[in-house]
Image 1: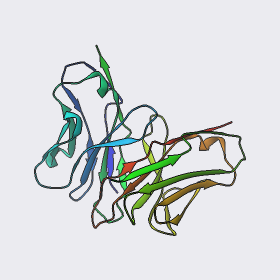
Image 2: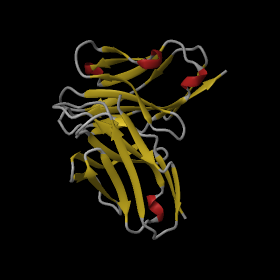
Image 3: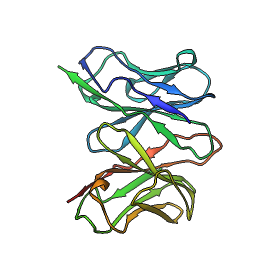
Image 4: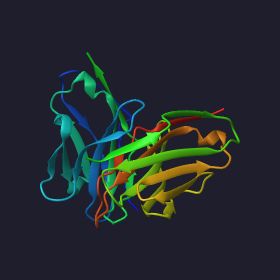
Length: 114
Length: 114
């Protein structure tokens, strides 16, 4: 069975600084990887996904993520954080089956300081 | 475009009372449907998923049940709520296909049990 680890429960970044959120997965074959963002009291919004091909994936809101098979990682990055990026971020992995069940990490809360 | 609706947004129920949360999807047909529960610091727990009308898979044994009476309607129910059923419940849908498709989430229901 697949699993996802997000090592950082909280991260604080200054507005305008760069951001990297870590995600490590465990899965024997090629994973399907996703990043979601959740604002307080709301549902999850898909930021980006990786299925195959180019290992650097561009998403919405200026986010990108890089798939590194050798490190079993799929870290999320943004060059310059805005205060509106403060939210909780979830990494998820899928096993690629037609049932489309995903395993989510426990999330990383991003705080943005002025 | 596709949309997903969940209601109610918040619900306060006494212990032992019944529960019915509803989720509907518009703009697509034969979606995969999911119910998740989210507890603080624990990420998302998949409760049920459905690949078609009347087809429900349960991921964890619990006090809850799910039904899919129509193609784009997914209902989460309980006959008698427990205190431990409190949480944030999220419905999601994904397109069908041979491989994992992104899941798209509703805005959630905050359930408080008194």
